[in-house]
Length: 394
Image (tube, rainbow, N blue to C red):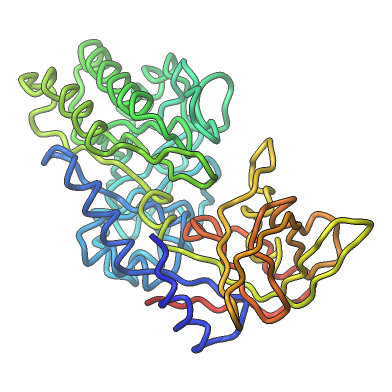
């Protein structure tokens, strides 16, 4: 639910365009998710969704760990007070500098995604005289059909193919400065199907049972990744958390008695789900015009500040995000079909195409919902050297 009064308050505090984040929404999402998970689960916030230091610190205080994908994100997590033991480091292209920094800080786990990476971690850990805890990121044999962005199945730069895991385990067992902690799987992002999420969890648990039976290993940690989606577009249904919780508990009821998982910590790494709906991107209408019978609103923001809203962040089909209006004068009830164009000198800079909105005038404001994840930090902010959008937290 959008709090119009908070948007108006933020408008009075800063210039447009800007991002507004709502602390209450972040807390609600975190507690709603943690409330449906079994007690053996831990939530690690995927910092890539929104690396704002205040947000990371807030989630750390709520009890979250952190999933990081760069040394920059690792520094943010440590500075925000996240315990090193509750930090996981993922990504297929970690550099020597990044791995050395993670090893020196003795973070909870490094997800290894190739045999070359295992050898490099062993070399760096030996040099640092430390033992590094690693989990094997698995590229499963199946693809997650309902994921908005697929990151598993088939040939991937992500993870080690599940059939090659025994070979990777053999390599790890031959290392003196690597401790095998468990496994990690992330099949994709923006999943809005409770059945798909539960299926992914069930698949990884069964894989772990087969692996443990063949390899006689201890599984201190099983990381199910993230991927929980949010409704960006008109008509999309949000995740039914009550149903999801029931499906997860049913799955875990079958494995609870198994001694393999008796001391295992289960991790889930949501990012978008925690912060996505907390954020709003606010931009001001500069001009309105008609071009050969079509109405346009020209705003002071654009795709350089919210690339996802422009449909340029891995989406195959461009769809209009949910847009709201705030009038600087008297509210207008009449509606029109209009295209919202940003301020950049490129035809790509369209924030909404042929969308129905109340008739707006210069000086009115538009806001794009669900901009809390993959907004500010995922956009080409330096394009054309416009001012950076402020970030406001209320």
